[in-house]
Length: 394
Image (tube, rainbow, N blue to C red; front, side):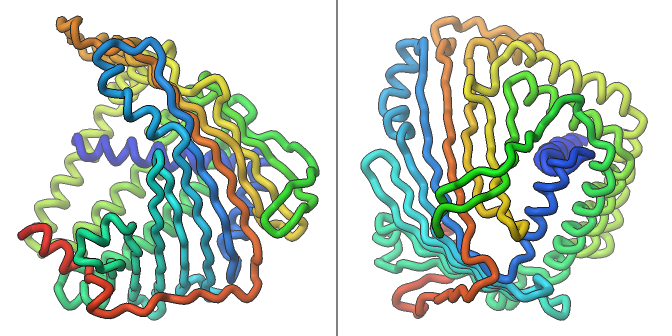
C-alpha cells in the first residue's frame, strides 16, 4: 500500500506539469501543440543556460557553521548545455549530443553526452557515452568515457527488451490519458497569458515571436497542487493506468510463480485503495491544507515565457523559479501533522533558505542539417558501465 501511495504522488507530479500545457484554454492548447510539433522535428540544436541564487536568513549558530561554505558555493553556480539532436520521421531512431559546462564556485567541470537509440522492429538498441570531468577521469586511470551499450547489457542478462518496449507502450498510454483527462482540467484561475508578439534575441538572431507566459505565485502553486491531486486521485482512468502499468511490468520482469504472487498483491492494494479512497482523500487534503501558511514559492514566483515562431515551433524559453524553505514553519507543520514535538531546542533550525533558478533555452536550426559526431572509443580511453559497477562492488 505504501508503494502504491508513492506511485500516486509521482503520477500527481507528472500530471501537474502536463496540466500547465493542456486544459480547455486557448493559450494552453497553443503551447501544447507547439511543444508536440517541436518534439517531432527531424533535427535541431539547443543552448540552455541555468543559474542559481541561494541565500539564508535568520540562521542559527549551528546553521551558520554548516552553511557558511555551502551557500557561497551554490550561489552563482551556472550550467551551460549546448546540444544537437536528429531523429527519423517515425521517431523510432535518433541521436543526441550535449556538451555541458558546470561552474560550481571556482571549479569548472566539463562533461559530454552522446546517445544513439533505435527502437525499430520492437527491438531496443542504444549506446550512451558519457565524458566525465577531469577530476573523475583521474579516478578511472585516466579514462575519459563511460559507455552504456544495450548489446553488452543484453549479453549479461541485465537488459530486457520486453521491459523497454513496455516503457514505450506505457508512455503512449500515459499521453493518451493526459489528453483525454485534461480537456476538462480547470483549476479556477488563469495559468497562461497570451503576451502577444515580441522581438527576442535568440542564438540565431533577433526574431519576432509569439510569447505565452506561465506565472504562479505561492497561493496559485498550492491551489494547482490541490486541484491536480484531487483530480488525479478521483480519476478511474489514472488508477486503471497505474494498475495496468504495474501488472505489465510484473509479467515481463518475473517468473510465472512470482508474477502470480505479485499480481495478487497488486489486486489487493488497489482494492484496499478503492475502499479507503474517501479516507485517503481526506488525509491528503489535510496535509495539503496544513501547508497553506508555509511559504514554498518565493517573491518572484514561478515565471516561464515560451516563444513560438511563425512556423509553430517553440524556439525560446526563459524565466525563473523562486523557492523558499522556511525551516521553523515547515518543521512546526510537520510536527503538528505527526503529533510529535522536538524537545531539543538547542538543535532547532531557525533559517529561511531561498533558492532562485534562472534559465534561458534557445532551440534553433530546426529541421536543418545537424551533424552529430561521436568520439572514438577504445579500451584505453573508456570503461564499460558494467565494468565500472563491478569495480565499485569490489
